[in-house]
Image 1: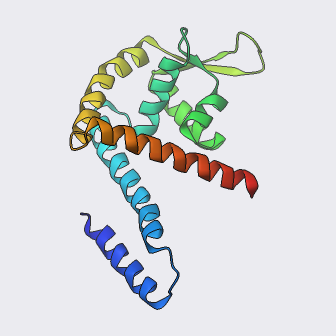
Image 2 (image 1 turned 45 degrees about the vertical axis):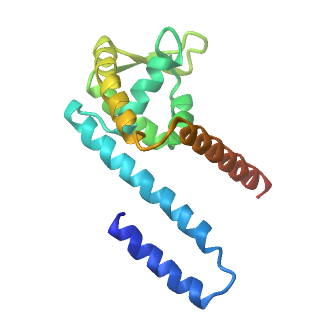
Length: 170
């Protein structure tokens, strides 16, 4: 277990000892999500860096590839898919255009809009990287049974729905 997380968990135990009623287990699980996300991001960035990518650029290229048959995607839809601000999507898109992986073109439906398209180099790159990442994902989940993967998926979706209801009610 990550020593930083153990330190955090020990601190939560001290607070819980002083403040009865603290939902200790749920506080720890919330923080565990942050640690897991950071660890995943670090591991994937390590693997992707040899291709000049990071998790954001990899996911962006994959999203454009999967978006439709023409491999085009509107930047606002990319931002929604990546859960990223307009500023971050613009910066990411600028980097991908500079790298030659993506081009910007006027939308076929609305000339005021822009669409992002994979270039042949971007398509070649993402098709080269995907199998490597798939192997990494298989390794990452090797300690989980198929039933555990299904159950975790169900529980995380349940949590997401609850968070969305909470957000809508706020």
